[in-house]
Length: 136
Picture 1 (cartoon, rainbow, N blue to C red):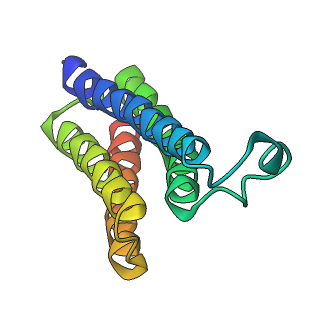
Picture 2 (tube, rainbow, N blue to C red):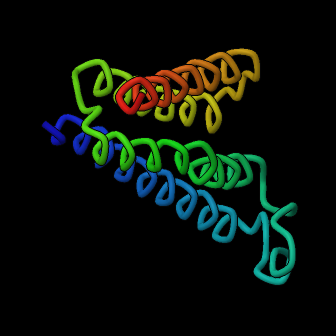
């Protein structure tokens, strides 16, 4: 049943919206605190304080490997690769995106963030492999 893949996908989309709100709040704080003025950031976002820049970088990250995830979900549904293993991998990927965000906009420890990112990539590869096996 394809609903097993719809739920993690909806969760990831919700997470992207949440990260967007975090970004908006951090940028708003930068303006209201006086840390930055609109003319400081019209061309580049480098003048924002670090918390706002981290949120911005993480928001951008939500449109990198998640694009592969969304493509894999559509392919999985098309070829019928919608079993529990695929759903588990999808949820694992979504979980890594959420954890990655908390690390990225929080302590930003690169080794831990990189490990979580790597687990997400492995989940995507597993999804790809599952689709490949379904079509050969």
